[in-house]
Image 1 (spheres, rainbow, N blue to C red):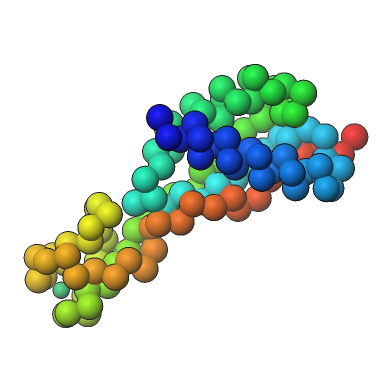
Image 2 (image 1 turned 30 degrees about the vertical axis):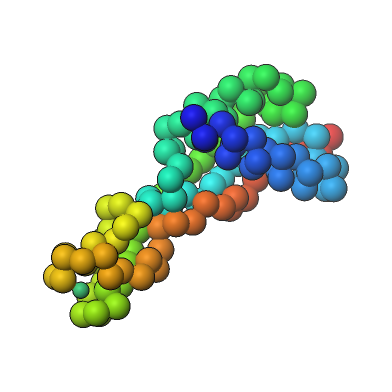
Length: 118
Ligand SMILES: [Zn+2]
């Protein structure tokens, strides 16, 4: 599953940043994941737990991953309707053609993380 590699990239970034700030143990990571970002929250959660349990020198045993879902939103470039696309190709419910400009929902970002510095 590609969530393993996404999670690996995230942990790499967090680890590099934590090293700069003298943080030795990660307690919590918060992510923003868009509904149509191609990452499944359940799979990310599972990947996080696998990495955590393999890296207990870096994570507290109770370290948590918190995922904030960003709702998808698209605007039709033809009729101007703002709607909720359910897939990558945004089909306007008015025009029934893929004319949507995605405004939100593709985000995949680290919001914050917390750790101990001793
Ligand atoms: Zn339309």
